[in-house]
Length: 230
Image 1 (cartoon, helix red, strand yellow):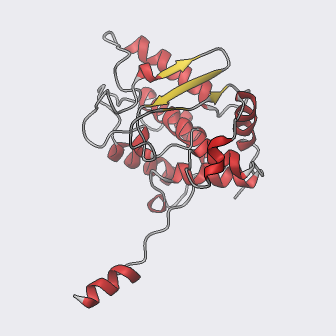
Image 2 (tube, one colour):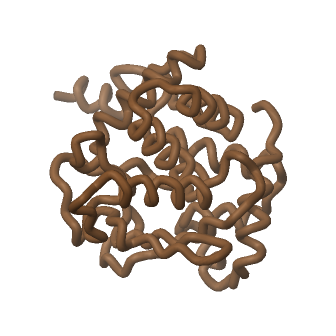
Image 3 (cartoon, rainbow, N blue to C red):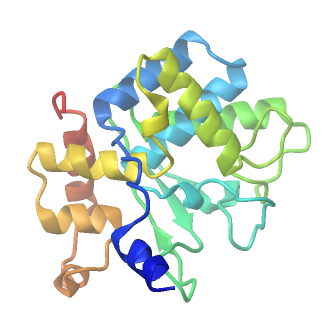
């Protein structure tokens, strides 16, 4: 009994490291998907999901489903508002939002080839064109058969692409995007309070009182594309 408690405290096994998917890794993922890995639709969907996850500092559970899609909880097409210069995905719930007040994320337009605004516009246009029964209450990210993108499928597909890119895919998981976003942000000297705002971290309560303009968030997201090899 005592030994089991000691093992729990010390850790019976060394946890496998979770490597960050930095902007450079994201670029290789997107390039591979652009060249063709799965079907045309699946490649486009995965590229959009990966790009939105990176620039939105998303947790895997915020854009995938665990088992079944629930329109009151999971991300739907209707939760994304596309404006002239930026898109606004609205998360109905997240890890740091126990009362489900929801939070909106800004994804700004850029002339960089890897950026979520153009990716999400293209993806939704493809969805509308290929699905006769397209409905805005449907899941935002769906597989080839129209079912919601589940975590297992996403991780399995992501690791397959990472293998193609020459990475050790077992060292990456769904949280690697969030880790990679913050790592890339730090490498280009984005201010700490802005990283916390972009990632919706709740530590350091002063951050909630800082008002961040849309232009500042746009510039910060653009800065992520300037990060060097990490």
